[in-house]
Amino acid sequence: MIGWLEHWWAGDPGTAFSDFAGLAGLLLTMLALLWAWWHTRCRVIWCYRPGRHPVRGTTWKVCPNHHTLDHHTALHRKHDAKHPDRLGHGESWTTAPDPDEAPSVSPAAAAVAIADRGPATQP
Image 1 (cartoon, rainbow, N blue to C red):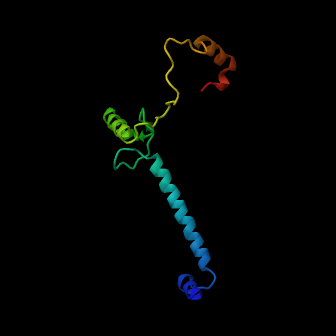
Image 2: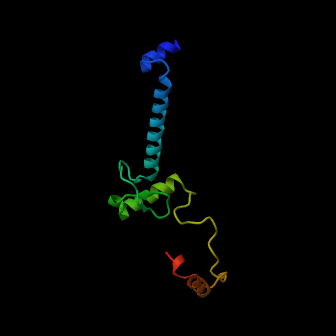
Image 3: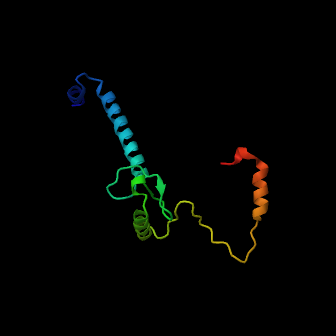
C-alpha cells in the first residue's frame, strides 16, 4: 500500500518524503506570514493595511488611512469593552504616584545625570 501511494504521489518510489517535506515547509512559511500580518494589521474591520499608529490606551494600531479621531475613539471603546483590564502601549501596572509625595529623583538631578552621559546615549 505504501509503495503504491509513493508511486501515485511522486511517480518514483522513495521521493514522496521530499515532496511532503517541501509542502510542510511551504505551509509553515505561509502560516508564519499570515500570523505576522494578522498581528501587525490595521485594526479597523476589513482593512488589510499594516498598522503603524498606536491607538492610545490599547494594544492596537491603525494604518495611516484610519489615523483619525473617529476611528481611534471607536477602536478605544471597542478595546475597552473587549479587554477591560488590559494595559495599553506605554502604560504601567504600578499605581499612580501620590501627588503629596516628593519624587525619588528630582527632575533637575535627572537632567544632570542625562547630560553627564553625553549625546551618544540620547535618542
